Amino acid sequence: MNQIAVVLDGLKQKISHGSTFIQRSYNSIGQATFHLPKPVKPETLQAFQAEFKQPLPSEYQTFLELHDGAKLFMLGDEGLVLYPLAEVIEKTIEAKEDGLIDEDYDHYWIIGEINEGYLLIHTDHAKTEDTPYMYWKYHEGSTEDTDAIGQNFGTFLERSMIAQGDMYWEFNSFDVREDDYYVEEETEDVQAGVPIASEERVRIEIEYPIYRRGGFIVSFYTYENGKPDLWWKSDYDTMKQVHRSLVSTLKELRFHFTEITVFQKEAPLWESEDASGEQITKRVEHPQSQIMQYDGYQAFVNDLPRPLPGWENA
Image: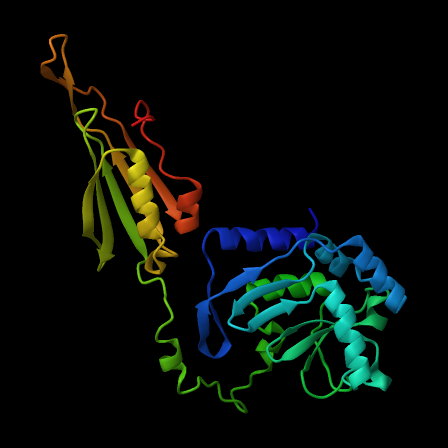
């Protein structure tokens, strides 16, 4: 698997585990959204080469062959946006016509945007890929004034994932002697309604019925000062009902990134009926138990607690 595919696979695993609440510079926080569309169409690649008479850098083309653009770590309208290739053609042509790409500095393609600026590929550097070709510039002004990111596309993409869509190449530019790291005064009010994972972990106990046609008892615990605190307790007729209730509860945003531990235990006694129909009680020689742990809601949904052996149809 190539570098681009590995990086994107890691991102998809992160999303599938529910790890989408992010924090960026200046306390920009919230529930991020992601969009990874289908691969680029071959005819669009052909149209690009016909327009610019130059092949795409190999890493960037590999990305497009997996996803024709992307919107990553989006908080509202802000995040890392990589344009579909058809839009790269359109934006680059328009930028040249409007003077955004200066005629003396016209060796750029506009491939996306981040933090009030455009992401650029330096076409001269991209011809051999021996020189870093990723650049950035503010939306205003022309390409006479750009900032070198210092990497090619593959490393840029990987580090952008680590930085959660932030401008990582600027992290070292902060100097305590010259700059003030600030958080806008209204940040607290703006973020007051943002849901966060208020519960670090939960404990779920599923007690199996003594009588085979009896009910399952589910106890749901959150933690207070490191100790389990019973939040609710309910009876259910079937494991399907148990699963449905737990999925609904854990879907709440307060549990979105919670460590989930599920304990299942079989009763030490089992009531049945003899030939005459009278109830009898038998002792279970070795009551079954099971512990399952999950890293967040999505992991729980993907692998629901399995019923104890012999209870699959309960």
